[in-house]
Figure (cartoon, rainbow, N blue to C red):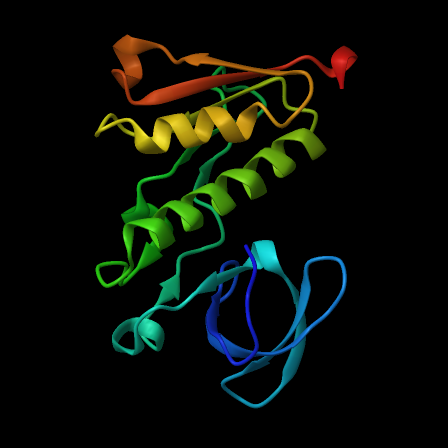
Amino acid sequence: MVFSLNEKVFFLNESGSGIIKSVLTGNRYLVENESGIELVMYSHALIKIHSEEYSSKIVIKDFVPVKLKSKESKEDPEIDLHIEELIDHYNKMSNFDILQCQIRHLENFVHRMLSRNCRRFVVIHGVGEGVLKNEVRMTLRKYPGITARDANAQKYGKGATLVEVNYNMR
């Protein structure tokens, strides 16, 4: 996402918001937070604020809600992308902002799973009209060696995607 000078943003992976003070190279921005401290942030860690009404009320929940398997567990790690699982006070966000937030959480989760050499994981997106599912599948196509298909219907219904990683193709 591209941001402009003096645009208001909130931080995806931590609480708080700020204002874009400078556009840097490499998808980075100089952001002044509510305390007046300037931070260098990557665009993927920021969400545009479109309304003053909710800008100070947004609280990001604990990074990414992830159910990780224990060593003795046979369950695959999973992330639930329902917006109410990701952030509080999302009701004033536009559909576009909600979708952007969900995809940023997905990308962070995929990077975490790849860094842990995880071979399989589940992305819960719900059924709805299929917009989030389509965005999830398009996002996953960007990663070499990753295949995506419907997850176990008995466990998830039609609202989840099973992701498998072939590290030989990465």
